[in-house]
Length: 101
Image (tube, rainbow, N blue to C red):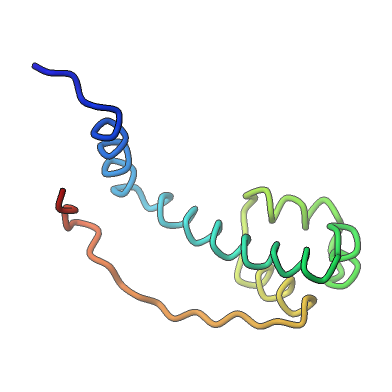
């Protein structure tokens, strides 16, 4: 049996991860948090000032961006404080489909 190349090895890890719902949850969280974080920075806000704008503790805002448990309510609250709205357009993907190599 031959040893897998690094790219084959990591491709296998990602394929395995895609069988777990947390993989998709984390992807959504990262995408949403990144967009809101960029807007926070664009507006020259920090965690404390954003927290004041959305009536949340600084630590709660920081946890949100650090990957803490998020809810649609928290996402909307932070977005609204930044003068933004969130539009979700669900796209269903087949998680059982193997990616062609």
